[in-house]
Image 1 (cartoon, helix red, strand yellow):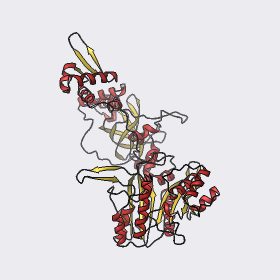
Image 2 (image 1 turned 60 degrees about the vertical axis):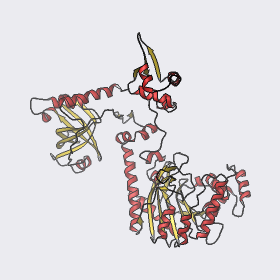
Image 3 (image 1 turned 180 degrees about the vertical axis):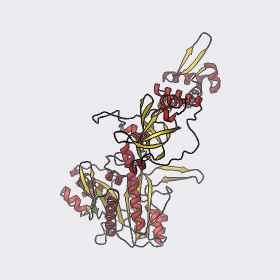
Image 4 (image 1 turned 90 degrees about the horizontal axis):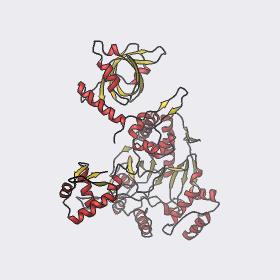
Length: 566
């Protein structure tokens, strides 16, 4: 159902075509300037050509002011009837501009730059061109003389579903995504300047490896095999280290079929890097230097706000072992405990666990519940128990631990890194332990990847690897409260269109009738029955069910029966 404004805009569309103006022209429109260039480098009476959306318009008889928004900002424009229409025919101004143009339309402007009496840089329009007609009105916020904003487009669900509108009417949203691009560019430059090679690895994988997570599964028809969307790109990148590259990295789209909240999206961006002849201690130094550099380049400072908290990425960051962290925040030393003892500790601390959890998972739950949220400033949590890190090298001083760190910021994991396990025999045993966990019911346990084990058997040099969540990093540096604010199109439940929710629950026979009727909205009952091709019994059952669901109704006239969609 079209709104009154949408109906009026479609009428204007038709009138434009009748006048001889194509509302969606195909030809190139060549611009000379962006709005920001004009505002930053003002030159009196300079000839300019710009293009953008018409966002504001104030008509005052034969003269009007408006605002054009392009990719770089906004600028005021001035329309004078006699300037635009120097001849006797004033219809371009009186009809096209005043009556048939609407806010949201894309227009091209040719004119000269001047300053108004109040000193505002403005374009005096000599000629304008309609470039694209907007058929839906934008939800433009209004600001009163006291600075109060009304009718703001600020409903989160609407903003995420209609990001294309959000970007137009909320300027700060565009700034977030510009900053996201700068953060990724700064990181890429930092890695390139260190001589590391950017690569691409498979997204569809026969074995989802490199992390403890539940994958999405699909099917390849030609090969007739299941395939998984990658949960991490770790194992492929380490294959490249085996192949002779000494430093590789990838900005990867990863996918995990897990819960959603303000810090998790099933599709997310991760940067993973692997460097030969390095260890996790070197990677800590490298990571904190990289983050410090990004802050200075993008923000101009190492300090920034996350909510009400001030966080600093000035190196060096704090470092503490996981077991020391648990001892510090719970008062319990679990370093010498076995699985059953740690399970008892979980019970005493009120940490929810289940029988499928092994020792490593239990420790992880304690840390997550009792420790993690305390680390606001960037902190490296180091030396994880071996059960928690099946791809990580055992600690050089304690074989029950691994050479691993996680970087915690504002109580959330930002980065994860290892001294990578390169012993193929040990690696195979670790995979086999993961299989046992899977058999116990752990749906996040790793798959065994025998090809990766074979790669290690050819020999991989000592290597350190690190993965960092790009979305969370952007959240922190842009002071955004949720991951949805830094993703152009976050995952959401499908939008329910009219009748779609009911239609999805229809039987096959009901769908045949409904789809046939949808093409015409109203049909003779006998004609619809014949077109459906159903038996009398199938027809009677299906047409009655559609009526009960409120999707159709049968209308009796003097000489026939018709079926209508409601």
